[in-house]
Length: 370
Image (cartoon, rainbow, N blue to C red; front, side):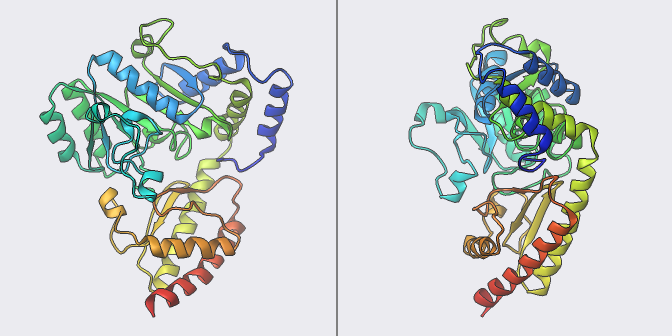
């Protein structure tokens, strides 16, 4: 919801599309136009396939990587969540981290064995796994800015290091930009950090709040997808015309207005304000932020990976969350989920938010420091 709820252009586009039909089970002109917008924005994407969710996008990206390389193994990162795909529910973040469930029931052990998990921001842990199972990895999949162990930015050179390792080992690099795509920058984190993936997955923002996802890459790779190639993937609701209309309207606004500059200014103002308040109330916190994406960790340790994210105290966050809810602010209900600002948040909203956090910090500090 990067434009906020019910942005007038998005609502108008949805209404107009709905009058022409909810679903056709076939490609539409709008789907082609949205695909062209995505390809124009992302230099790594020549062709793109729309799906109905981020989970479908990552599932399909893994299948494509396996089809392209003839390999079966996948490497992900501790605390990284890429949807409820069987192959990727290994040491997952998001809900799995919140409820202390590192794996999921219903995932066959034989399939789980094909997935390895390295430490985020730790290239050495990646190198060891690539050497241990040499020439067996189809892909490395990574959130370029982790968002499901809370917001954790990539260390300098980390993404570029993954690109180099993938080149050396004949492994494909999948950037899961379901969360970051068109959110942290026009074109996503790959533009912000100057890294070129083999496959990109997208979601959320490209639907303007409607259910949609996408995966894309070079023509050579994408031509492996049915009906042109041997890798089958299809969906009746893929490229749904109403969701596509919402996505086109959203991207049009993002492209033509200085929204990212405004979001960065609001984010900086908020971060500085919260850090000052935490220091004033003697609360050990760390604020991680990339653009409009952020997490306040209740820890005195810098958060750079899943292990350091888990040093945050959930009991403090839980109290903070409920007190903020009482102040009329609904935050993500987990210490290990990222929060986002939207373009609808004005300067006065940031100021009011900081005032409410000040009141809540005072209560939290009194309760936990006494």
